[in-house]
Image (cartoon, rainbow, N blue to C red; front, side, top):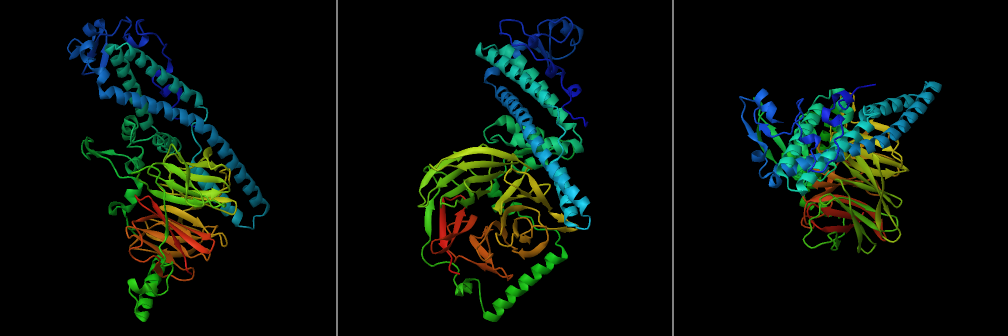
Length: 590
């Protein structure tokens, strides 16, 4: 069995013994000195950062700088450090509680994935001539390796023990706060800080093999809180900055000096929607494979030749209109006055009801056929994309690494119906032919094909040999007829089209623009939103030319989400915008 940093021998001594809960009037174990005399602590040493009794003062701290606890603890009840320490303790308690609960669900899913892999291996042994079984086994094994055989098997009791000890710290501290005993509060605050530093030092001792399994779940649990309002989460995430490099993309992180390691500055980063629209985060690919470079050259040559032969400019390409010139329909997705929205995904149920996902407030909103507002529900984690399966909505939560199920009732209400634990940085999601396709960004980009219960059937890696198919798949769409997978790659500035086996069918280079949300109409023409251009573009199925769909001036802002759905008299194109509360509905003419 692989040993982890959470083994019994690695835990702090005070974590191994659960302190008794005693009233402040009675001498507690926390207020006694660690020496053999077991006297009450009365002094604090600044040089050694310890609290000690009068006997230890004459034996060990004669030449040290020390102060009485009454002098040091003065004003501790109104100090911000006490608030931050309390929040850190609450964060750790929630983190280890989530790790223990998620472990049970992960073990069930891993057993089912192993069972699927065993069945494929048996089929491969029976029919060794067929190579597709071998490819599926290899891809499934790679995906299981990425998910990680978690090293926390059997550690649920230790996690519960840590949670119980943290509860005791918080209870004893609250007892001292109720009677306004500053010395008692300072003693518990000092000891709890020691335990927090001990746990963080154990986390830093985790090697690479163990961190592949433990840290993603720890990171998911930390990021599951609201980082904006919980100072304890922010401070703890800064402490884990060395082991968790992705933290710098979501919260403020201190900048360390390369020489002495001191903290230079700390600044709050932008939100996910603002970061995608900022030129600071727009990275161009360092190198393109030969096939992708040829596709880019052909695309540019085809566009240049067509413009020269027909004498077209950018404004004159609307010789054949793609959308109706009639003013589009509009409806407001804002519930309260002055509410800011950032719609990252939209979905439509079979009965005509409409769902909007707002990543700024982490809410899902339900609208009727006549665009009337029904209800909304707040999700306790960051959200990105959604898809509809019957009357169930599957929502990706990149921070916590899960897919949340939300059920829509007949009386127009929303309620949570469980979740599927998966890999972090799950971004785009799409449902097609009884399968759920999920794209993953971050350190291990790829695509997983799941069933409705979250069991993985196939995995498509982003790297095939020396060719990088995609790097930052923000959105994904699957065609119903051909089952082609359309991937919107924001970093590499292209749209990659794959089949179910992972073979490249087509590459559409949209540089110098950055594609965001993507959809496909009934003829499998690609429609995507362009970041920073206030435009929606289209590429026909059998051509490389990128066409602007909507005339200049008819969009109110930068489009963040697009969706194409059939209407009563043709197809409809739904367009949502960053920071705006309106969704426009255009009628397609082709």
